Length: 301
Image 1 (cartoon, helix red, strand yellow):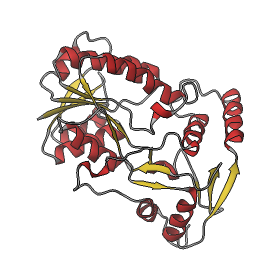
Image 2 (cartoon, one colour):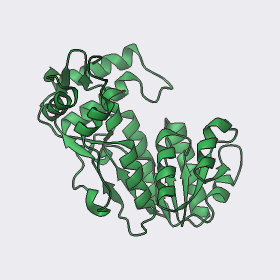
Image 3 (cartoon, one colour):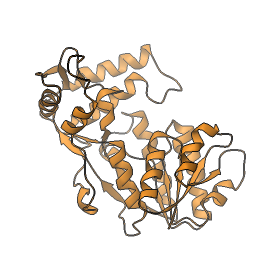
Image 4 (cartoon, one colour):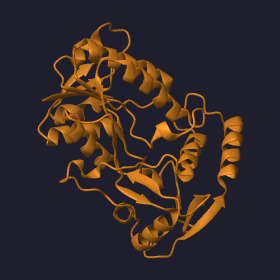
């Protein structure tokens, strides 16, 4: 079975290609015209067929998708990418007769969030409407927040003061999945012709209190929950941040991460029910394991 992966040179896209090759699938990796060969080399090393596709080449999306049983989009960006380029990919897949399409959702359950409250989720919502109107079988994989963000762009865990931030209730359950686990599940879904419209996964579902306990166990020192404010105060911080630093053209300006945290701590975007057991042999990385693997050596923390 051949699967076409768009955005294959990106972080998640490359992981999906790697997971598909582990499953024995043939992969057509779709990359932008003129992509640096250093970024394409890992795809060649995995045995993927690399095809350039993008703006300025009429019909190239259709040609690139021809023969694929499923197209997986791992696009990441703003409206020009998530809506415009992904729509061109979708139309090419439909013209090529591809039976299935997995969009670049990989998020909390944006269908449960209020329109206008989260820019990046609004982009996914807008593309969903186009996808549902197309003559193709669609399956979205919702995976919560990437677990890697705990030490990155959504730093809930502050290691120096040994605190875990929370807004609203510190007992609100939050969904996290590592990128590798998301890629492994997506690869299985791409090869599974019987997938439903929505699949929801979470490597771990934990509260801020649970995060503090996991960090304490992983680092060997006590972490405590720090209530940073109410959800209302977080909303005010978002408005101020957007005014002072609008972040035009940035995919993840600081306020975008704050919007995501607000939606998670509100609880409406929880992933239920979970489909983790759809492929029983897959194993899921827990937050405590992840924090142990990323912890600095004792004495440097």
